[in-house]
Image 1 (cartoon, rainbow, N blue to C red):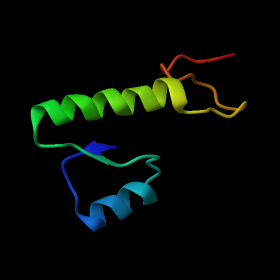
Image 2: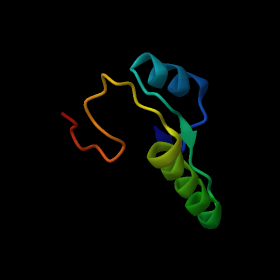
Image 3: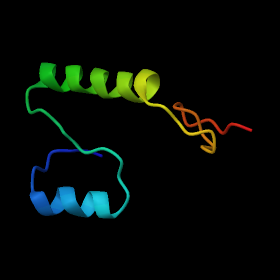
Image 4: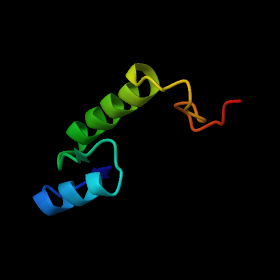
Length: 63
């Protein structure tokens, strides 16, 4: 979840609905670009999928 909300009820509800990450967007544009790069690196490089996961980090179905 990438959002501008820091409201606790939004965070709690997002996790209740199954989000696996909650990132608040920085207001400053340069900080936003850095945050997007870091989030992208996490999902593309660092995140580990289980062997039962049907999709890779790019959203492509694995067989």
